[in-house]
Amino acid sequence: MTDDVLLVHGGNPLEGEIQIRGAKNLVPKAMVAALLGQGPSRLRNVPDIRDVKVVRGLLQLHGVTVRTGDEDGELILDPSHVESANVADIDAHAGSSRIPILFCGPLLHRLGHAFIPGLGGCDIGGRPVDFHFEVLRQFGATIEKHPQGTYLVAPQRLRGTKIELPYPSVGATEQVLLTAVLAEGVTELRNAAVEPEIVDLICVLQKMGAIITMGTDRTILITGVDELGGYNHKALPDRLEAASWACAALATKGDIYVRGADQIPMMTFLNTFRKVGGAFEIDDEGIRFWHPGGELKAIALETDVHPGFQTDWQQPLVVALTQATGLSIVHETVYESRLGFTGALNQMGAHIQLYRECLGGTPCRFGARNFKHSAVVSGPSKLIGSELVIPDLRGGFSYLIAALAAEGTSTVHGIDLINRGYENFMAKLRDLGAHVELPAEALVTA
Image (tube, rainbow, N blue to C red; front, side, top):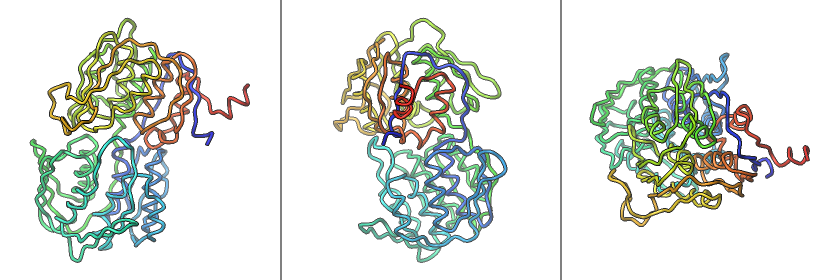
């Protein structure tokens, strides 16, 4: 597919302004939450990304009316007539997204049963869904696995339970929240994820009538209610996209104003950005990120769950670290395969060595399990345009950053994957002065 390939002519700084909207890691989940209500919900600040389209399609298959509102980036979701969907139609969405797993709780409450197809998502390491099903069993669901997917039945109303997560997983926390709010009794969730997107989902559910208490020790108490209404909510901005553009500014020696970026959920990133040598300026409308000149500084970095340095920030920042002077150490503790994208950076001229050892002191999910999850980045490196194949969402955008920072032309394959989480990224690149074109456009101008 020629429209899935992008030619990137690098070597120029990215300069200008772009706008970000609601977080990819919140908006689709808030759309699923609308299933729980007895009335319509209004979700604002919705980005035009593929994950939103996938969830919209799944909701419509289940009888939810989804339409655009009067405001730009607004969706009205009406679940008044929730119904069973055709298995083949649901299966058509298999592989497109991992979000269908979060339909389980709401569908069990509304219909008494659910079908979940095989799941897709980015290949960045183990993200087992069996734990989701085990959680649903604890609530009282009966689960049968078949070749085409998994069938779930709730013979009676789901019941609150006590759950302690072995790891503060975002997906598992979302599953518990979306199931517990209408379950009978109290659910106690220990070692929960507390990312800003989780807090925003809790805000959505509270607007619907849920009773949810967040403790200071990663404990969340959910008191089930008999009925929920709709919500009116503006999604929090996408801090992960904002950080990606910040790293693009740093790697290309550019200057980008990210309208919509918010300081509070990005505080950890901003501290690290400053340590590397990047500059930023915050106002009421967004954050300006720029390379102030001079050398960037090598750092030691470890990813962690919130409020630590997010794993989704790691890949774009590693590209910027190839331009820093000295040896940077990166310890990835969240996804065991997230450093696999560095091979292509080495192909472009970077000097990155991967290690199986934990090069840091942060508790790691997979230390001594033979995964190459630590990296030493030696810089600065002169990057040269290359042939690149996008491996996953964040790695894909990181390849774009590397191609933009490199001398010469890169051919980037699989750019459609970036549409999962970056709204109108082609238009934004061009607004920032990037010289990017599809092969067909290149032929026309040749």
